[in-house]
Every structure is written in C-alpha cells, then in structure tokens.
Image: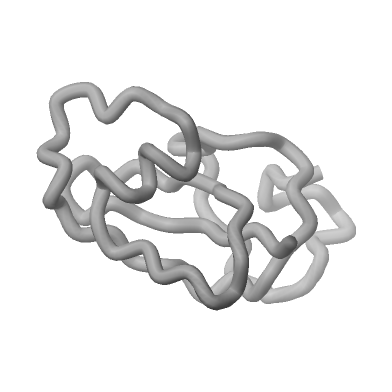
Length: 84
C-alpha cells in the first residue's frame, strides 16, 4: 500500500499515512483515524489536502509535522529534505 502526506489547513501539521489508492481522506478526523493519532484541539471537520508527493514508501512513520514535503519530487538522495 502506498503512503501519502496530508496537510491540515487549520493546524498546519503534515501527517504521513498508508492507505489504499481508492480511499479519500478529506477531514482531520478521518486522517487522525487512519494515522491512529489524537486529534488534540483541531476540529474533526477541519479540511486536509493530500500533498503531491506521489505514493512513497513509508520510512519515518506518522506525525512528521516538523518536516516539509520534498519539493524535488525525487528521492532526495542528499537527504536534504529530511526523508532519509
């Protein structure tokens, strides 16, 4: 199963989750359920957007809110994007 990065518009967090390509995640509540994380103070109906990262291999787990998505679209062989 591929992994996807989602960004919450309300809290700015970026979360990486693994799910089927056919699944559609559009709210913070759905994302927290799939990622098995606590929604904390963010409303469950808050919008989330899937980031254009393609389907990546899960390397670092969920909750990478402090690591921005790789803008190169490549594998970041230098490790500069924080996904190594």
